[in-house]
Each structure stands twice: as C-alpha cells, then as structure tokens.
Image (tube, rainbow, N blue to C red; front, top):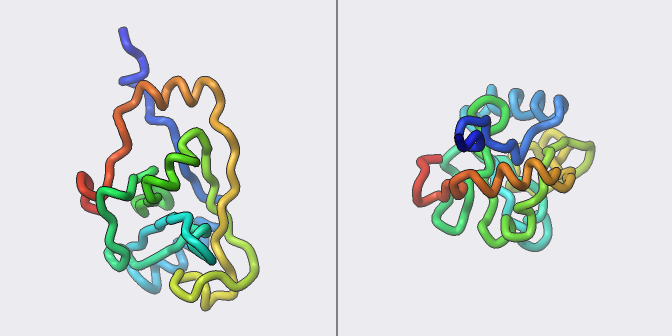
Length: 139
C-alpha cells in the first residue's frame, strides 16, 4: 500500500510565533491576507504580505501552503525551482521592508529563514501531486 498518499503533505512553509502575531494583527486591520514570494530585485526577495486578492496570482505562481490558519503563501514558479527542496520559515524582524508589504508601516519586515528538506521529506514530496498554481486554485 502506498502510504505517501495517506500522510499529511510535507510542510513547505510556516511562521515563527512573532510572524504569526504580526499576521494576526494585520488581518484584524486589513481582513484576509496573502503572501507572495517573487524573488525579484530589491525587496522582491522578501515575502510580501498583501490584502488577499490585491496581488493577482496565475499559472506562474505555486501555492506552497497556508499559514496562520488560512493565509495562502504563494511563490513564483521560477523562484520555486530554486527553493523546491527547502523548508521556509517566515519571521518578522525590526527594520524597514518594502512600502508595498502591509507590515512596513509597523517598523518591521518579514524575512525568510530556510533549511534543506530531509531525505525523508524529499521522498514524501516527490510522491505528492504537483503544487497547485494560481490557475487551479482560488487564492
């Protein structure tokens, strides 16, 4: 029997407690949220937090998972090609991030911490179906 199909999917992204508290605070103020990680220049390499629906995702974006309950975390497919064997942890630190991300006025910024997936996680991931894209999931 294939046990990979009955297991919980491999977690690819999570929040630190401090980041989760910030997301909760932002959600109370702005409503449902979403994250997007593009890997572009400047602050594009930081996870960006938007009101859900403010950033349009499409076939060039993959849904890594949901954090803080039901907050989708998207990544551009080209960036995911580099990070696919990495577990990401979103943290929040003092400092000025992008003016487009919701945490910027709070004097903090989100950033990613990462670790390589274990051999077991990689094996389980490879047995899972492909990640949904913005063409297949309503954010």
